[in-house]
Length: 75
Image (cartoon, rainbow, N blue to C red):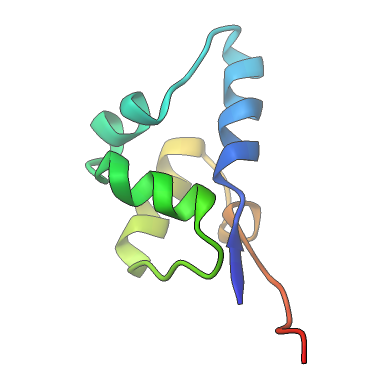
């Protein structure tokens, strides 16, 4: 299962820029709907398209491994 680290990325960018960055702002800058961003941040096991990951990497200036991590399914 993939876990998206969107909340962590938001917190880090907010800290670096010295201001609060919201999901609405990320949605406006990336073209990804706020609902999709919210699901990525809060819904366990949410599946998204690679285009969204590409846009988030460009927005945050990071690699894919900084946006998402693989967690093995518990048996």
